[in-house]
Structures are given as C-alpha cells and as structure tokens.
Image (cartoon, rainbow, N blue to C red; front, side, top):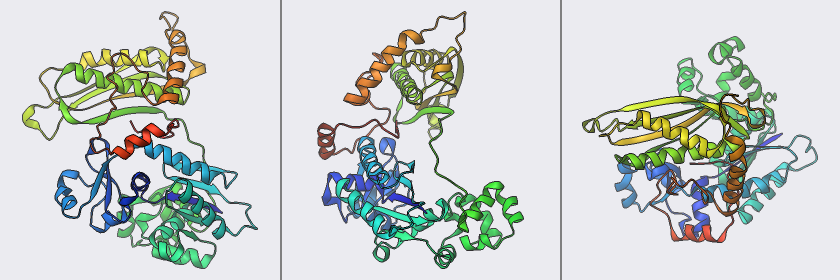
Length: 423
C-alpha cells in the first residue's frame, strides 16, 4: 500500500501557525509580487475566489468580506514543509517527497498494521509539532492513493482526514465518483477530449478498450489504467537533476533605469549559479532575456534575448553574473519600460566531469573555495547574506503584505536550506 500525505491549503495553514486568530476566517496568500492568489482557505473558496485570481479584480470582494491577504512567506513555508516531511518520513522506511506539501509513504509490508490508526497517529503528531493539518489517502497504487487523498479532503467530517481504498468495492465506488479531469495525469485539456468521447468519470475510462486508451494517451495511458485497477506501475522516485534552470520575474513596477535592470539580471544569474551548485552541476550555456509590458503598447514594445556558450562549464556566481552582464549589454535598449526579465542556464555537465578548454583560462578552480564558503555562510546565517557587490540584497520578488509575526519568526528560527527555492 502507498500513502499520499497532503497538507491542507498549505500556504494558508502556514500563515495560521503565525496567527491563530486567522482560524475560521477567509485567508488568501498571494504570488510573487502580490499579483494573484496562490492559496485559499476553505472560507475563501466558499466566497468564490478561484485559484490564480488577479488581486486587482477581487479587491472589492476582499474588502466586503474582510478577506485577509498575505504576501508569500517562502522561508516559512519551507520551514514548515521540512518539519512535516521529517515527521512523516520517520513512519516509513521509504518515501518520496513529491512537492513542497505532498509526500508519498511506502506502506508495503505493513501487513499487521492498522493503517487507519497508524495514519491518524502521523496526522496527530504533525498537527501538534508543525501545527499543519494534513489529509492522508492510502491505496494499492500511487494513482489510487491520490484519489483516496482527494476523498479524505472532500469529506473531512466523515473520514477525519484519512481514507483507505482497500477493497475492489471501495475502488469502484471512488472511480465512479471522481470526474475524469481530476485523475492524476489527465487534467483539464485532455479531460475535454475524454468527455467528448463519453468518458466523464474515472470509472468510464476503465470501460474503454486498451487500444483506445493507448491511442488517446500512449503508453502512459496503459500504465494509468493498471494503476486505477490497483496494479502497481509507479514506484517511489528520487528527484531527477534539472536539465535547465531558470530565474525569471515579472516586476511589480516597470523598470526604465539601466543600472536597476542590470542589478536584477546579475541577481538572477547568482540564483541560477546557487541552484547549479546545489545539484553539483555546471552549465555550458547561459541565456538572458528582457521584455516590455505587452499590455502597455503605448509605452513601446521591445523584447530580446541572447545565449552565450561559456569557454568552460561553470557554476560560479562570479562567472555567470559576468556573462549575464555581457549579454545584457548586448540586448538592452534605452527608452523602454521593462516588465519582465530572466536568466536561464542549460547544457549541464557534472561538476567533477568538466572538460577544460586548453586555450581559455579556467577561473573555476580559483572561485570554487569562495563559492563553497559563500554557500556555507548563507546556509548558516540565511540566504543571500553573502552576495556579489553589484547586488542590492533585495529578493527577486516584492512582498508588501508581511506581518510583524513573520519578522518575529525569522528572528527566532534558524532556517534550514530550502528543498524548494522560490526565487
């Protein structure tokens, strides 16, 4: 059996750990630059606030119903996430961190355990230690565990946050209840095609011939059918190293000053280099792009980007920031108001397998001890405490709706290295 543990309305739940007076009130958390809604409490959902709602369109509704809106507090979310993952993973020998608020636990071999009671124990400890409410779905396959988790969330009073699909009757009933687009791996776009073919519920998909499923979804569809039947196709996975890394941002306010935009570009390159070192990779190619606001055509439109092949593969913040600055100089044009920019690194090689160009000076050996020391200090004292002189130290996103409770949290906690970097 597999269990999927999912934190309920995770970002909002994290906010409530700072201020318990938010319990029972409509709360939303906003995206980078406070532009749109990325997490909602159940009370906010009941008001009809959709995921991704643009703040400017719903401001009147927020005021009318006293909806509390908060800037995203990524350090807090990472802190709580790692608390939850540490507690949950101690209950199973094998696990897979699927996302910042989801974790698969491998319960195979737990034949003599009462999984209902065992899962309630996990749920209770997380509620006490991390103060985060979770739902747990248990089933013979990961796909069915996703469905079981959805049922546990949908009917909290009935199942007290834990639901187990442990019989063919339960599985059939669940699949007849679940809309086809809610099946893990299908989604809205493919769901439309499925409905056009008369597949409205997950159960309907099982009634289709395998050749039809394969034609519609390829080999992935065949695996999904088996998973829905309770035949395991997907095991636990370890995170794969990324093949490209990007740091891109839309700015809260358009930037027209060249030096201000240059500083943002160098900060994005710094962030990419940090992520490369975390997975022990170096990149061969760096790309920089800039873009004006496509909704403000009266201010003039301009977009451009350029890629550079580095003489030697690198993950040095100094090398990548310098390369990003060179590209920026080549693509920047005066007289425009820039709304978005970004840096992308690609074509990776392992850090210990770099092939050096004999005609180029290799700066990596000189920078390596500096980068290691910088990473250690930032890990110990907080992100970006040590940075390049050209950086202003501000995050790559803007957050205006932060609370005094959050400042207190940052002062009183040593933050672990982020499993998920948000900027």
